[in-house]
Image (cartoon, rainbow, N blue to C red; front, side, top):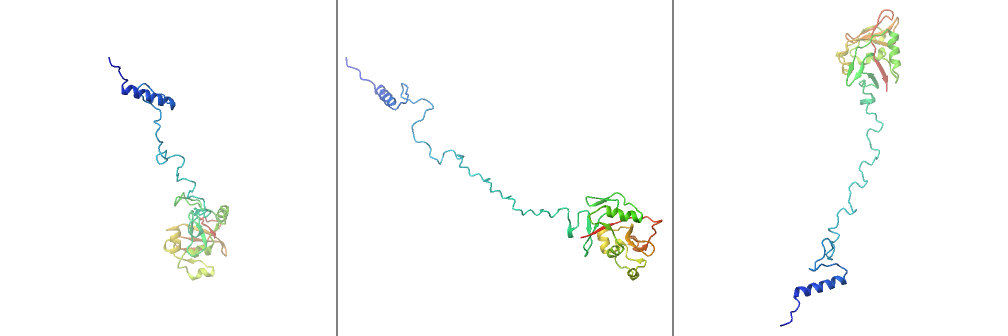
Length: 222
């Protein structure tokens, strides 16, 4: 009987195991490496390595464009201030450096409107009410009232009673206060009594401190 030679597969397995022992890699009888072990091949190059390997090109690299350069246009320019330096609750007098409260005394400015009824005062009360507001306010003078009315009679320049156009018919007064028809004290003394101005008729007259009560408007110089 002829001697049987080892099969090629058995011989290959023996060679594989011999090599595995040399390389300290465990092999099974079939000459396979265990699952999960490295194939021993070359590792992926850096091009396919973790793309977030702390080489992060994070665009938020503290180059924040909001770099507080101090270009804030609201830097102490007071957003409450309107045109010509007047506050939101004030109205600028055209061509003059004066700011008037938009509302008569007793009313409150509320989002573009005057809320509540205008209050009436005796003369001393109206003068005091404007002064108590602080901020440089005073009860409007006779001349300041005449300045916002138009077509005033020449006699008014001689400290006499007379007429101007009503507020609603005067360009400046109408733009500031609309068709206001109230009568206002002024801070100016006349020969016998303080001056008052009726916005409904444009009459500038001396009014009795003993019997009369009127409204008040406050103004300040810029």
